[in-house]
Image 1 (tube, one colour):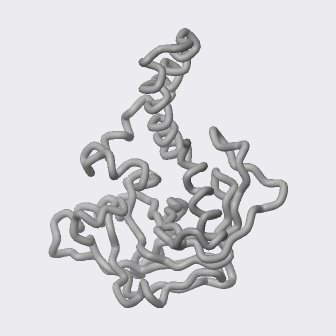
Image 2 (cartoon, one colour):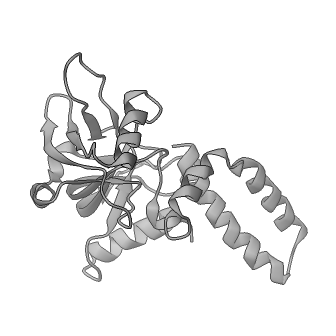
Length: 231
């Protein structure tokens, strides 16, 4: 199964009462254009359609629980200490955006390093982790890229769990369980398109071979990389 199939299965399992609300991740956020003398603000989420055909309704955000412990994580990784907090988070109803103003932990060398990356424009995006509470398929929609045959989802009510600084968009369920933070960052130089083509060529040459299962598993991993670098 690819990542999109797993996401959809978890959503439908919750909707049918067979599972708890799934924890999903969307790396569609960005840094708002800076204003002179004003603090940094992140656009954590908006209502634009992402590459999977999904839309998150801004009015559906619930963040009261998040505000009790508004930690700012790095790459959704709870194994390392937070790099700051979000003392202020709000919805701009006019432009339909979830906005968040960070308070960086400047005493932490790593947090200060990440902050500098944003200030210099090296890093720009953030990613939200949320629990989907109410949603529906978008009629007549399909996603994009390798998951184009699957429906887009409109999230109408969702609970914010955390916000992360991310060097590249990622689904941590697919990557952080396999990779260290250093390996995760190094994926930016991975030539996934070339490797994907090589594996597909090898599959064409194989029919029944013990090697085939391993290749198919690697294709799923490369598919996760494709999701990152074309987002």
